[in-house]
Image (tube, rainbow, N blue to C red; front, side, top):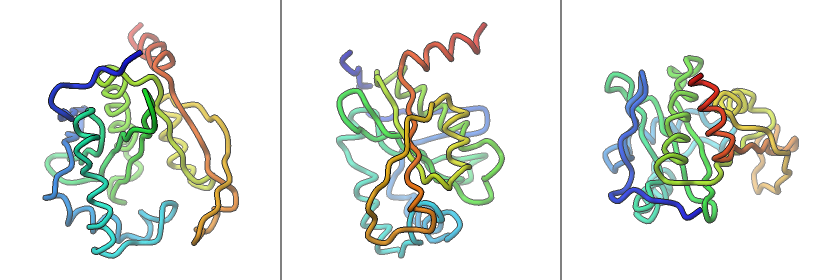
Length: 191
């Protein structure tokens, strides 16, 4: 199936508690605070400096992703920044999903709530065929989010890292959900 991209880029996504709006340059300070927290970055990378965050910011605001209706969304709860979600292209009809939240937002179901909205957008609006994700085997919280949004575990992959984080030797936990699986789950929740 040919993806059907929205005509004007990424929309604002709304959930019960969150507003997910496209990432802008105005969000840079919040991203710096988020990526500077060693606990937030525990399974992702070493905490980053403001210069490293600015460098990575360019990739997060890729206009070609926006044109496809993909990219990064900032999550706001009652107007306060809680983190971000991404849906970035991995190949024809396939995108990668991810999220990163402030510690104050952990354990409240916000990661799953935002991720469900991003998955729905990816399948219902963009027309994706498959959404994939990965996290370290030792990151049980992210695995839980993946399961809650209907993803299934597809394997473990061992990667070579220049500067491996503790637990990296156990590998990356891979998951995915297809459009058909999402549609079936959506029907199950309706009836």
